[in-house]
Length: 116
Image 1 (tube, rainbow, N blue to C red):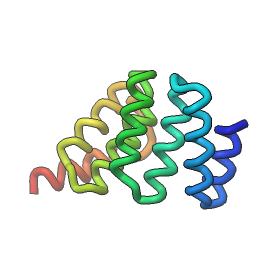
Image 2: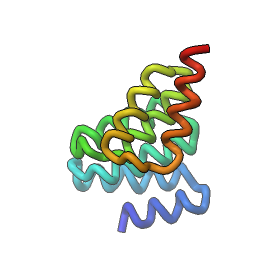
Image 3: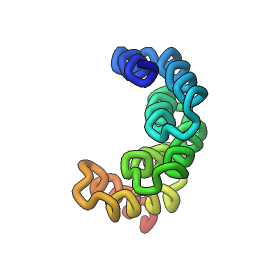
Image 4: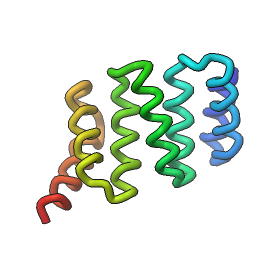
């Protein structure tokens, strides 16, 4: 229920409570990659980009093919202006899931910034 409850909080914009629920889920099962990924999303929505990157990395350490965590990490890097890191994450996400919605456009925008 912890992840489901966290998602409900996140859906209603209560990111603080969502982060708490995902953190509890991680405490209960430190190998549960999706709990880290969901907490990364809540951190991202709270504009806590370094924390979001940390959680994405934790999810990827457990499930290296987690394209959602990889794409999310790219978004966080982009918000921090770390364009080459964002590009690397977007490329890896697309390598795992070639038709990942919106990521090709994000990658194109980052490429444009890097070549400007």
